[in-house]
Length: 130
Figure 1 (tube, helix red, strand yellow):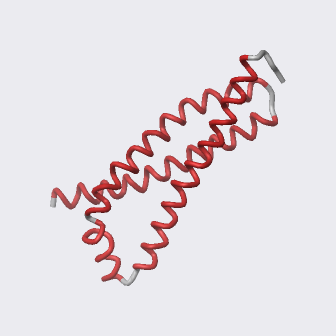
Figure 2 (cartoon, one colour):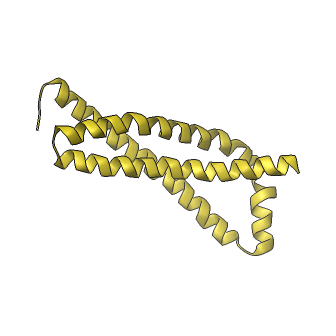
């Protein structure tokens, strides 16, 4: 029972980590759009949020990688066979395609938003305002 609980908890937290990565990227995307349209205050808010949300993103990515190891090892027992018994293998496939898409989308957004943050920082350092 103990090992079952740990594996199920790991799998759940693995899914949550994917959501954290993607949702923090979406929040940052919205702030980035506001920063592009706004003035120095919006750009500073974006820069502050970028630093904080980046820590969340790295933590989520670490959990996705580390938690993915036992998830992969125990996938047949805890996910595939139960899905097969319930007749929901296609649902499981769709879920994992969405999870992978979320991780990729979150990563791509993060790279682009990092460039935007560095551009704002360079503008600030050069003394360019509004």
